Length: 469
Image (cartoon, rainbow, N blue to C red; front, side, top):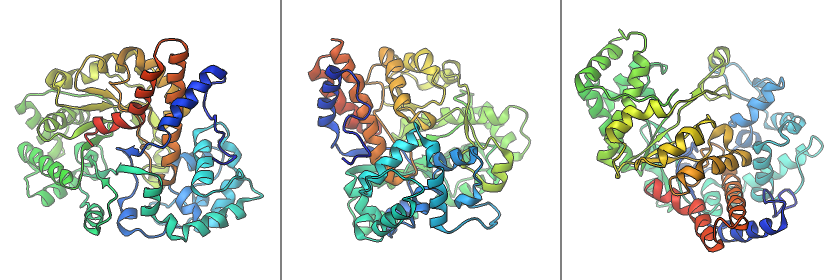
C-alpha cells in the first residue's frame, strides 16, 4: 500500500486493540467484493471501451465532489457538469482537473478525500497527494493509464476482485446493455435492480407519460388498477430474467399504506386521471410500497427502501442541471408508524426480505434496530450516502448492534456511481468493522474466534445472503 494510505488507517490508537484489528483485517481484506446495490453504468461493461479523460471519470459525474466545490463558489459549469438546455460548459478535462486540484484542500477530513487518495494510490499507483503544483503530472499519469487495456472496465472489474455488481435501472429501461453483457460471453457478473420510482410517484416529472410508456412496453392496460399492477409484475419478471434479485425504492418518506382493493383502485383512478386530491400522491406512494412487498412474496425480489431525502432542494439548480446534482438533503424520517401498515400485512413473513436504509441517524437505536430486531422480514442496510463514512459506519455499529445484532444487518454495499472508488469504500468498511470487533474482543465481550467469523460475514457473506446472490 502506498504512502497515501497508512497500513493502520482507521484502526484504534490503543496498541492491544489495534493488534486485534490488524489480525481481523488481514483475514478479510482480500475477500471478493460483493456490490449488490449501486449506480454504475452497465454500458461500461457491455462496450468495454476506455474511460474518458481523468476529469470526466473522477470529477464531472461525482456529486460528492462538485457539491463541495459549489458550496465554496465554484460554478458547476466550470466543472463540466452538463446543463439541461445544452448551454455550453467547460469541456477541457485538464482545465477541470486543475480547478479541482486548486480546491482539493476543501475535502480535508471528508470521506471523499479518503476515497480519492485510495483511487490515486491503489488504482493508478500515484503516491503523492494531489496539489495544484502536481495537477498536470497526475492528470497525465492517469490519462496514460486509462489508454491501456489494463484500465478497461472489464479489466478493472476483475482487478478489483468484484464477484458481482448490481446496477439500478428505471422500470422503463430496455436493459439493452445488460443483454449485451450477457451475450458477450464475458464471465463478469453484472446484474440489474428494478427501480420503479418514475411510475409509482405521481410527483415524478412526466409521470402520466411514463405510465403510458409502461403500458406500451408490457401490453398491459395501465389505465386500470389491475392492469397497472400486472405491468409491474411483467417488468419485474423481465428484470429477473436479466439477473435482478432486488427492487429499489427512493421515496420521500417511509410511509406505507394497506388499503382495500377497492380503495386502492379508486385512489389509482384519481391519480391516473389527473384529479388527485391533496395527499393522494403521498398515499399512492405509500400503497405502492406495500404492493411491491406483496409482489416480492411472489417473485422473491428483495425490497430496498431508501427514504428520507428531499430531492432537488434547489428549484433553480434542478431547472438548470436536472436531477442528482448534489441538492438532495436528508430529512427527519419516521419508521415505526410509517411502516406499520406494510408490517401488518407482511411483516412476519419469513420468506420476504425488506432492507431499510436511512439518512436520519437518530432513528437507528430508537426505531430501526428495534424493528429489525423482531420482524423476520426486516434487515438494516449499511450507512448510506451522507453517512457512508468511517464515522457513520462506527455510529451505525454502536447504535444498531445492541438491539439488532450483526445478523439483522446486510454487511456493506457501496451505492456508488464512482466505479474506481468501489475498492476504497469496501476497504474502509472492512477496516471500520474490524476496529469495532477488536474493541469487543479487548473488552472481553466477544471471543477472537467469534470476531473472525463475524468479520467474514460483514465483509462478504451477509450481503450475498441478504440479496439472494
